[in-house]
Length: 371
Image (tube, rainbow, N blue to C red):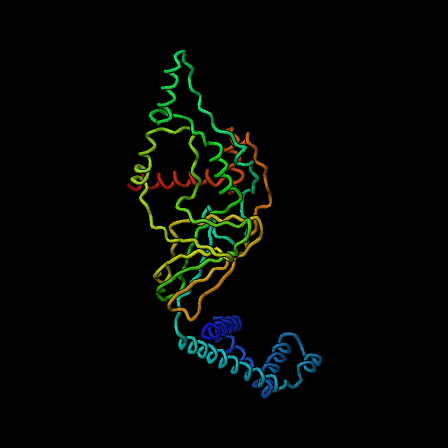
């Protein structure tokens, strides 16, 4: 109820601002004084007499000029102008005061809005099309292994020993599942959009217990996952025993952040929850982790914002359209590294990985300059 009253008051205020310019008081005075002047003129014919006197003094007598000006001015016009000027001034003053009073009586609410940003952190429209291309992949069973080349020795025992060492991981060896891993990356990321969630409080009131819920109809061809990284992990061509320590090193260089998004599903919907908690006035917040959305048909995202100070949740919708193009991926595309990289650039948000890496480098250089 309060929201509807506030909306009507906002509309009324916009109308008043259109017909009540900053110089409205000057306009009202000009109209009133013009009406007074017409009344005086109609009574004394002072202006007419002055014009005739000046003309005849410097030019000559003119009966034609006297006949043109020798008419009585209608007093009604002057009265109407005075009345309109006074009414205009009174209505503008009282109307604005009334709107301000009514708005002051309404309870104050935070002004919340939830935005979807794409993988480049640019705000998306209420209807948008996913970048990149959908793909069709070969059957997993038809994708060959990345064969390990084992040197041949005259001594069969030596060959067996070298093979055993490689299997145990004491030396580098080829990743047998490389091509299948590349297929999985393309299956997950091609024709998908990386989404960032951002919420803004543009009002003057603190928002408490804020949370956001996204609902997407669950259908064949629609997938959504929460991720802690914003680029796909590049499958490694070789496996090294030192890789067992790489996870520890990564944690040291990139501290873990709290994943504040969670994705749940039932028979009808995918549901994303984001617990924002409190949000100060005139501030914004972006979720720590990301959403990867993929669809092969137009679908709708319903976004609902909950907040203790709001009389009712705020609901908005986004329409998501799939990429217009579908590409056929061959086994040779998966086996050849250069072809695979070009395919990723084309299918995954039109070169998203390269842009993301450049952004990381730029931020890294800025941090080094500041330190």
